[in-house]
Image (cartoon, rainbow, N blue to C red; front, side, top):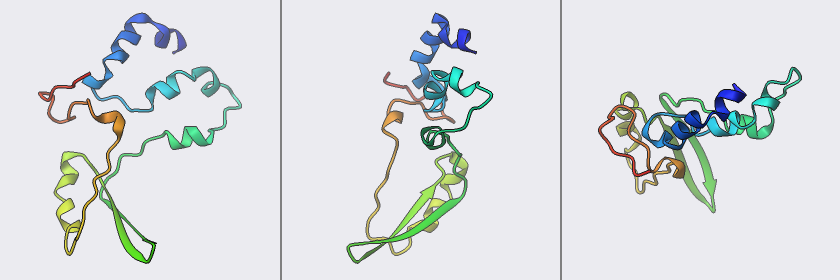
Length: 118
């Protein structure tokens, strides 16, 4: 794996990863293959934080900040999940969309005709 990851062709391909679907954490883990391959490997806090679990359904979290009640909805971004969003918008006064800054130039997974700006 280390030799493959070090290959110039693989690195050239990785440099264009905005053109295909590659997990944001791939480089983090591939750059650290030696540590990850150790028999005594134990995941670090960063390892755990950089793992990705695909969101399916809607996860709702309630919290209060400065005497204001908030409901935070984590919704799956995949096309099949989008139809579920409408149920989150009843009696809503504001919507804040949060997205990964690292994904601004990625193509839409189900629509390969979108053009990345990378």
